[in-house]
Amino acid sequence: MTTLIERTVTATPDRVWNLWVTPEGICQWWAPDGFRTDVTRLDLRPDGELVYTMTAVGPEQVAFMEQNGMPLVTESRKRFVEIAEPTKLSYQSLVDFVPDHAPYEQLTEIDLEPVDGGTRIVMRVEPMHDEVWTERLVAGRSNELDNLARLLA
Image 1: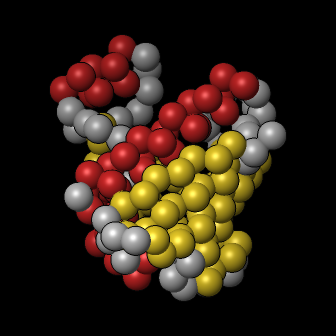
Image 2 (image 1 turned 180 degrees about the vertical axis):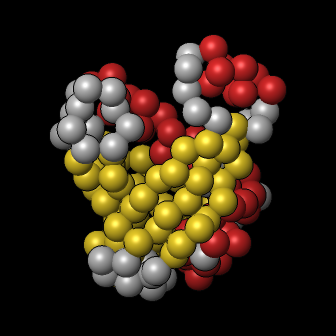
């Protein structure tokens, strides 16, 4: 079952779009607290790819990653499915980091709708292979949108 996550931010759809589809924009809000995101490739077209690294930089996050035998830097890939500037974006995320599970793709769809005083963001998140990983994904996507809202406040 698809999960919906919604936020309203105080910026135009064009401003939100630019933060979502440029390396400079993504690097400002994409990472969870204590991590940094660096975009290494962005080919914004259907079947184009976004490749980025996420690096643990906060002391608590570094300690957590090290204690759990996890790398401090991970590379992630997304393949764009639909692009309709500045109102709709969807992408398949490559899920290749789950131990003992074959890699697969997970779909996220974003709609940006102008509203009084800003933009309503509606994110539809396809579930992952089980409930625990889906909850982690939804928490991560919610954190991303919180970071975006803070940046635009």
